[in-house]
Length: 244
Image (cartoon, rainbow, N blue to C red; front, side, top):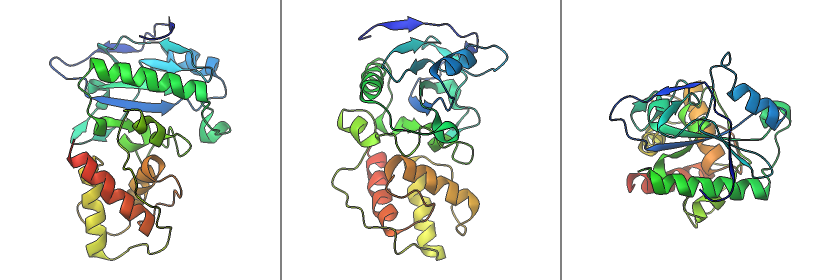
């Protein structure tokens, strides 16, 4: 692995189920006031949470759980037909206070370290681009990290994850509410990987999923609405996801 990686073994780990591939990469923010507070919690047996890696704002990388073991970072989760994503994923915690403690932009050195780490993980494990996801993608009703300030476009430009190129922002007008249009919205979200019902109105569950999608793929406006800008980006991401 490029650069110095520091080890701080967490007791919060166990074995993965036999014959389960590592095919998902989940990015989080720590959502705590300081990096030390996050590191302490991820290594506290009473907390029963962990991740495989933590990346500080200065770009230092801490290895907490060996990749072949299961870290406890995803919680109740779903992506592309799979549940309990701790079984098949690698989790990276990115130091940021988060929405509760003063959410801020991610520093350049930190993002460079995250990108390099992701590229090395993708080289070691069969993780398709469509399975590089946010914590909010896999648990949209519970989580919002790493949030709308995280630059998914930059990561995708460097070979980490999916982001459609050249899709214009068509604004926040023209939000759809009719049953036929929402059926198409639900279908596109399911094609990307989200768990959504096939039919139904713009209910709280769909709003949560739309917000998760927007935080990842349309952070210009995290509204929970299926507006014009969201729809065009949604269809573009769905096409990319269906292609792998």
